[in-house]
Amino acid sequence: MGSSRLPGKILLNGYNKPFLFHLIERIKKSKKINNIIVATTKNKLDDIIYNLCKKNKIEVYRGNEKNVLSRYFKCAKKYKISTIIRITSDCPLIDYQMIDKMIGNYENSNYDFYGNTHPPSFPDGYDIEIFSYESLKRSYYNSKDLFQKEHVTPYIWDNPDKFKIGNYNINKNYYNNFRLTLDFIEDFYVISHIYNSIYPKNKFFKFSDVINFLKKNKNILKINKKYIKVNWYSKHINKLKTISKNDTKFLKENYD
Image 1 (cartoon, one colour):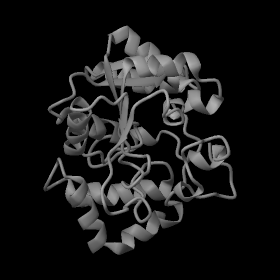
Image 2 (cartoon, one colour):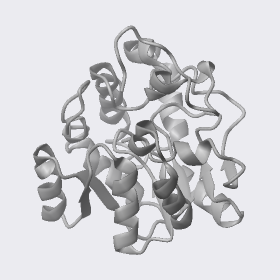
Image 3 (cartoon, rainbow, N blue to C red):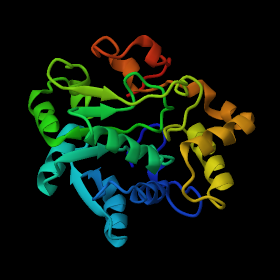
Image 4 (tube, one colour):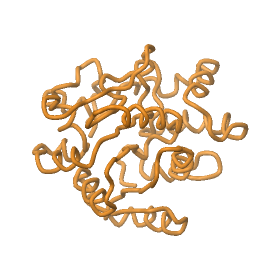
């Protein structure tokens, strides 16, 4: 709830309900996820998320606001989770078939970490990270920098000698041309257009449905075009070992 750029963004309405509930609805469609836990903060602002989850029988855990790595580790430890699939709440368009495809790839590998962001080929808003509890535990005890604790997995990315890391990508680079995360008001307008146009006919629309819709409605693409590749990487580009300057965009204003 405490987003500085778009306060309360995950409870903004998509088509008839908050984006948080849309996200959970889409993840529930997965055939490979056993348990969904909303890991929110102890900040009083997030009481509303906690209460809504409880009211709707959604598992919810509360932890440290700034140290998200600690929140994840303690949540996984409490629930005795062996494999974590990390999907952030600013990804309300996530594709359950993509989730299942990636989990299947992870299960058939010996990876400690498997994601779709290194290097990125999917747009911001389709970020999926899968990692073992042991990898999370090692990150928790070894991460020193604040950005490693805030963003959960950078310690893993930057230590390929200590972790077996795999990346799921596609031939086309959608990352450079589309932005489908929920972070600015312009992102909200884009995602709202998508939901209002596709959801009534197809509740569980796929990634390809979204891309095809945007290709046919290029005026919508223009709404948040200036924010393509704008992310937190830019603030820590000199410390991140495996992120290049081509993976981010620098804004004049600060981006946490």
